[in-house]
Image (cartoon, rainbow, N blue to C red; front, side, top):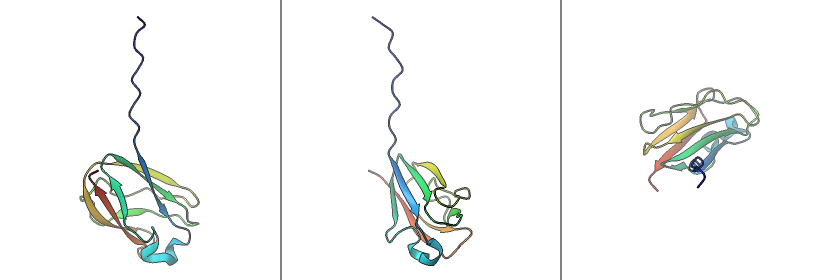
Length: 108
């Protein structure tokens, strides 16, 4: 019998959160009109679809595993985080503080 090959790693579900085009003018709707909901064990992928650079920061950094992104470049800059800690935090852009939203990490 041939030796067993390596086991495939489990697939991690990725949930993308977008910084919308013209985000600065959208203010409270810069991340959409609903809270960003991620489930424990998923990868949160921030994607900057706007024409300006942004850095997203958690208002309550101990509430979830998300603290902040690096500066996300315009037109597609992205960064991902594995989310395991359940909780809720308000979020905002460090560069444009009027851009606000809510991030919720829930159990499945």
